[in-house]
Image 1 (cartoon, helix red, strand yellow):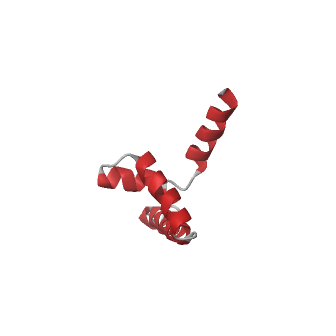
Image 2 (spheres, helix red, strand yellow; image 1 turned 90 degrees about the vertical axis):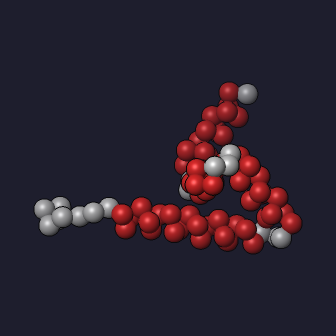
Length: 74
């Protein structure tokens, strides 16, 4: 059981963070959002995976664009 928990923590720590971000913004548990993505992927043959990856890309770009650089950083 310890191995399963470590694998779960690894994937939660290294995932894109889309479900956590949406959960924080909407006030919903991130596990519920993860289940929604899983069930919707099975029902629609994977199209929410594309949505998930697009959201991950946008969150990643948003993090990079928010970094403020001054002329002294270069």
